[in-house]
Image (cartoon, rainbow, N blue to C red; front, side):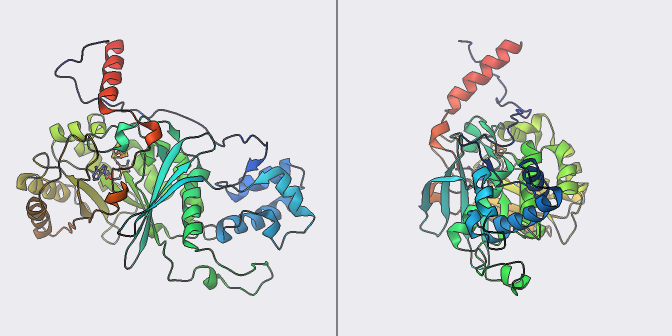
Amino acid sequence: MTAVPANMPIPGHIDPVPVPRPITEREDGRIDLLGLPKKQIAGLFEEAGLDRKQAKLRAKQVYHWIYHRGISDFDAMTDIAKTMRPWLAERFVIARPEVVEAQHSSDGTRKWLLRTADNHDYEMVFIPDADRGTLCVSSQVGCTLNCRFCHTGTMRLVRNLTPGEIVGQVMLARDALGEWPKGRMDMADEETEAEYTADGRLLTNIVMMGMGEPLYNFDNVRDALGIVMDGEGLALSKRRITLSTSGVVPMMDRCGAEIGVNLAVSLHAVTKDVRDEIVPINKKYGIEELLQACADYPGASNARRITFEYVMLKDKNDSDDDARELVRLIKKYRLPAKVNLIPFNPWPGAPYECSTPERIRSFSNIVFEAGISAPVRTPRGRDIDAACGQLKTAAEKKSRAELDRIAAEKQAAQD
Ligand code: SAH
Ligand code: SF4
């Protein structure tokens, strides 16, 4: 084994690991339609033998049942001819991610441990509030970016989640919360659109803040959110969806242009030294480059601000000077910004502590007095390890020491 040099940089591969895997093959040979757009469903129906016109019509109906109604049994699709339903069921399924465990926090937060068809575990979290309910969705199993304060960052990346596995999280949450429109939904039915989108829903917002770096799984995240935002799909407004990135600068423009959701950026530090240490992707895309990409983000405005996430780490990034520098940077780039101060959520073996409440207050005041909103996020679901940065599935455990060793060996092999 190679000795680790004392001045070794914080390890962590910075480039995305390409793990293409569109649809996982099913053992029974049927194709899972979950996560597929209408066009692709029509293509599959045509390949299976329907003529083009039929395929298009059936795809429209099935798409509506899947995403608007949450139906996963072809037999319940009442506007499709009775003889057609078994034909569909022989060739296709509408699956859900498998739920391995569901946990309830004392504060109402719920966490689900999910399993992919090829046996990888990932998590989603639902956070209810008085005026909204937010689902925190994962984009990858694990993460390639070893942010030093993040528990997920101690997992290796196993693979990107498919669009079906991403949309599947939202579908499961709606199942669990009982939030599918009732009614029969025959196409000829009198039911109106208003009945589907009735207010008073529990699940109102989505944040791509679970496991993984969504911009390193761009295509699948874009396709999944496309279905979530589609008026004929899950019909959630893009204003209610936020994607959080650790700063994958080259993908930010495409994120704004092709997905168009709200942007959150995990800034966490205002100097190169500190950000290099705690968010290692900074060594590739530095703070100034990142903030310029934020200034250029399509669709950002005072009405749709960019959120800067800032985890409060004791004696690391939490001084008054840090707060003043944060203000200076936001003003320099004229960013329509708000700052979200996140008290550090501890996990076993974490190398940091949370800043004191007084320190957080002082930091928040400095930012706030400069005219920038800087609320402190209340930690939720800490008792079930569902809070920010605590997600990590037992099945994929790898200790930080082990990761450091692997990175050092890789480095040595390259030298
Ligand atoms: N990979 C993306 C999205 C997932 S992380 C990103 O990094 O932005 C969601 C948020 O939780 C990020 O801002 C992340 O920095 C923060 N976070 C990670 N670990 C944390 C911890 N232990 N305590 C508090 N926040 C944490
Ligand atoms: Fe990955 Fe985000 Fe955790 Fe960093 S904070 S390791 S990018 S999930």
